[in-house]
Image 1 (tube, chains in turn yellow, green):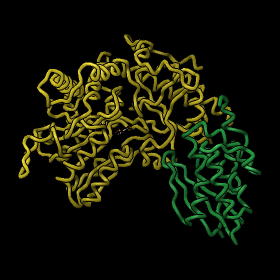
Image 2 (cartoon, helix red, strand yellow):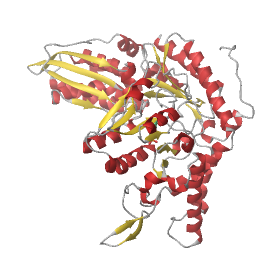
Image 3 (tube, chains in turn orange, purple):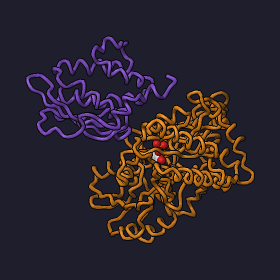
Image 4 (cartoon, protein in one colour):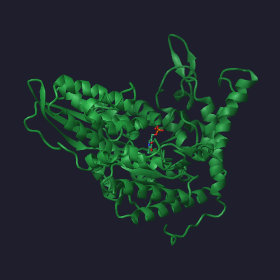
Length: 416
Length: 151
Ligand SMILES: Cc1ncc(COP(=O)(O)O)c(C=O)c1O
């Protein structure tokens, strides 16, 4: 144990109390205390979110935007309230700019298939970074197949930062979109999104931000960023699976053709002609994830019940402590050493495959991700097939880092 | 299983570190490429088959200790077997690892070497690691040149 490391908890944060909100964290894993270090893949859920979702089914459930009866109205109101919560959470200008989708992946696909199909043609260029998640690569490749557009990939440095000069120089008269992550799930890098958007806008190019890893970690203000599109998933924000958010500026959404056709997205239908509903309903065909969306609202309430700067400071302290302890082990290499990082650490242990690391840590009750993290270009960039990744959430504490370091000692004992 | 050592037995660690029959096989007449996209493991298996007998087999690639050790031990037991025997072994090994059928060690006959992998069946996510080399070998015999993807 490195006892010299100062353990400073931001005032007002009681991690033990936060932990107690998450029922799963009190269950043993392989007979040991569960040390959950895979929040970047999906966060665990607090009681408040679980209760909100079951409350819908127990007391407030009916289809929305349809019935005139009391239950349906209550469900509709709760659903619409969730939209307002999301709007406030990311400081969008209007509820009309919030489209509920299944997850961030669907958000990107929606933009590619509606805005992209309408506005992009052969030879047009989209700027991406080398550290994108597959969710922000493959939808554009699919559109490339259809339209013949080009993907321009901005490289990253050895530390895992965007090569800024390459980004600035990447713009041409053919550049039509920048699609980039705000926080890399594989490396933890926080990209300078406000500057990225400023540069793009100076060229008249809109920006889609993949905010999947950013939203759970730091306060996000889409208007301050001046983001044109912003996507994230509820499940990484301590909310349920099956619901995500696409934010887009109203004037962009208004000009976008519908995504899927069906109920809820129309204003009138005859066999001769259908007129589409206004935004955001135009993009929400069919019965949505009603209970999940309402529970996402509860997740936002939960997060906002804390001092977010204190949460951020705590996660940062964990990152620094974990980085320091891992760096002290000479068999460990950390991938992603940007000065601005979220609480994500990808690493390799010399001579041991990440899968074996993952299995041995699991045996110790420690859940980490081992693999390519849906970011194979990042793995290729660093010349590794996979890494082990520890990522931290609001319920993690310094003892989780100590457990990880102890688990790694076990790995070395077995593979030594 | 309550001991990690049952999964990571010495034989597995040894073959994982120093795989046997690892490298190129220039006079191979069968080959296949195995890939586990989940973890990025990639193994190529090459065989030299003459008159229905596996005269030589080698593999190359990168993977975790379990997948490398499994492919390594596989090459050791395959040399000298007929194609039919190799196919039957694949089936038996698969059954042992997945726990689908109750394969007893006796049924593995002289292959008790492979029994070190029986601990894998308690780790469903690792089954693909242990079978990657075998799937690839099987594909090389059945459909020379194939790309095998396990998921
Ligand atoms: C940066 C980033 N983008 C996109 C996604 C895709 O999220 P989802 O699978 O919820 O659609 C993830 C999830 O791993 C991510 O980390």
